[in-house]
Length: 176
Length: 243
Image (tube, rainbow over all chains, first blue to last red; front, side, top):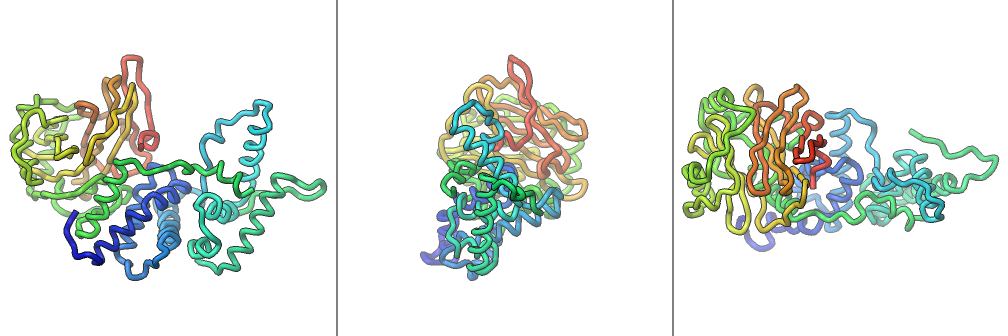
């Protein structure tokens, strides 16, 4: 590591990396295959270095927002896949009913999750997976806190509805 | 309900490995130093002469030597199966590599892996408490990268990882490099390209490496890894071997 004065721009950047790398890697790996995550993370830190003056003290949401944009650009530009989406643990792909209530509940949860739109999944994942507050999640999505809170409430409702469908009411469908 | 959702998290217990920390920290240092290259998946590459440009994901990049015309010669003499010279036969290249990072002359026992394809030699050498990979054309060092700065837990059985992949150069000068690790039961590692080419990796100790003319190492979906053991062969997408 090169020497630089204490408190320098370089040191601030290194400290940012030390504090945020595991969280940023997890955030990205929730949304793209692991083999692609490292490139995205590298790109985010390159942006952070160039715009270090813009990085707030609570850096994670800012970095996550840059990562979302990077991933969206990558999926559009390079691989032309479907829209950016949150993955779920691969262990759920291998789950088979075994008669137990626990496995049945996990299967129901995975099924319900898959009925949600990508936008709903993102809102829920920011809180449940990434551990962000509503304020932080709003920063990631670049919307107002109140807007995020409303989206979160509706996403929860749709998940609840998918888990416990009300007779006579249309099931939650896949939304664009 | 939100608590239950945590069960779905694909990265719930995910922590970066030591190697990932090394790679990411090295990237940060390259960014600070202004020597970072394009991202692995990007097709836009620097136009520095031939093999001198590197986009290696792993490491501190240093010791670039520009050798006009070397790319053509290296490509012309490239072979899909490498020679694996004895360690004492690559001491000139090892010395050149060590001098790039300011170390004293290495001994043959410091060479963990040596592979040659024509005039290009890739070495994996002990560097301080860790390992570095170094590529030389003749005895000119083109670049090197830090692989690990300490001991790494060995892989067991037929386990295989790939630690870095990259492509460098531009246009017809593009070439790819891959470095990975392997367990003791692995007898051979091959890279299978989408155009049908098959490249045998050089192996040594628990490491494997290969380079070839072409951009695939910086791309997604254009190459696979074939792992051979005494029991047979398995084909893997790189993503399966990433950690």
